[in-house]
Image 1 (spheres, rainbow, N blue to C red):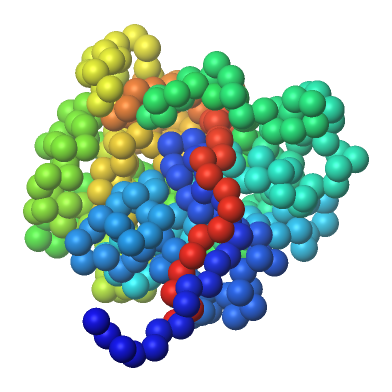
Image 2: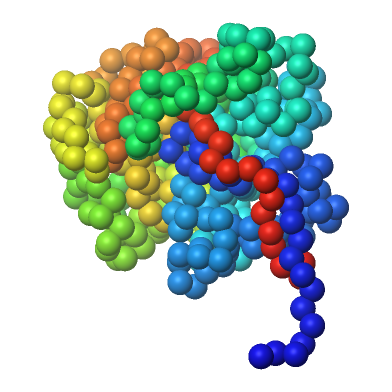
Length: 402
């Protein structure tokens, strides 16, 4: 047994929450150690240790992470510094096998838990919380500089978490939380990409990927920067499940190479080598026309239940369902005639909120966006979808003081 002295662990107030089809550790900024209350190496080191990264085994056994991109996440909330907003929401995507926290984008799924956490942790004026009804929480998404509105159900002055709303990719029903992503496309103030919803200026580009091929691609910055490619151009049907993609390292490497070249075309990085330090964005997804398939839960999804099929990768692996921010990109692209997403959905102008339902590995999801052509450029007022959220555990996380 070692006789060396090692400092004891410190404890930090935290809440472990599910939001949509993701899980993450939530903190109030004021509860973090002083050095971690500002962006930088100390904050990243704390979150890496909390989640259990980097883990060469890829399991995050010594932390709160669940060894998938959907469960290797951290959220920091504070009273908003922005006018007419309640809370500032900062999201960190924690790499599993690397000492890296990606702050380049939002997590749309965990957004569903932000309002509930803010209400329950004293970040919302109590005068704005009804005894029974819905509390509207105005969120400033600090990673990308965007406004999100969460409509959180309240019963007897407290957040209502239980309910009968079912979300494919989540086993148990819960209370429905409606989320509105306001003006979700990129603008000149967005830190996540260029100043146009379509950074290349085109609805469809030919993306040249040396050694792999040339692909028609819709590259859009709405919700999160996303590269859409036709499934058939990649040799897929659009009905694939996780094991069909994630069990093949060569396939994953191919997707990562395509993503890197797409990131350069979108102006997110200047060279493909920089993609390794920007794993969270952009996302890459493939789309196809509707067809029947069996979801990961064993449920049959019929072709007439959906408008199109979408499969998306997150942090280098096929997602088990769909990222919330990517769903915003899907809804937005579906609303704009001529994008690959719109064409896969039949070429209709899906301009109405709740207009498009797509199939993903775990089932289906409905999302809508209203897009308008203004002075020759496409704009979107908002995208909207429903998710659910629940507190799983609250108290303290402990990490070695070093």
